[in-house]
Image (tube, rainbow, N blue to C red; front, side, top):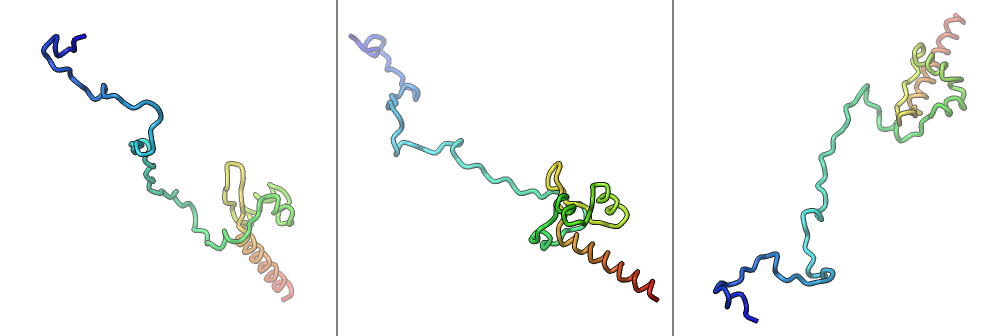
Length: 129
């Protein structure tokens, strides 16, 4: 059988897609990195806006209270008591840890209890005088 060059007088064109590729899985030395195999570039870290006064770092090192802990320790008796103490007596506001969960740093709760105890001592001194 005659080849194309003999029949037409032209040389056959060879394109990149017609180059014979080896069959089977690639060998270890044949694997090359492609753009989709490169690791993702790290996005710059963004910090959320700060609302309210800064909280000292010690507050997160010490344990805190959940609502059930406040009830169990006798600091509040119910949710309405908690809201009343927050509104009228200056009990610390919670840190929201989720959509339906809150956490009070123990340092803030203990500071509030110390201030209440100091008021009690002041009232006793005023009544005794």
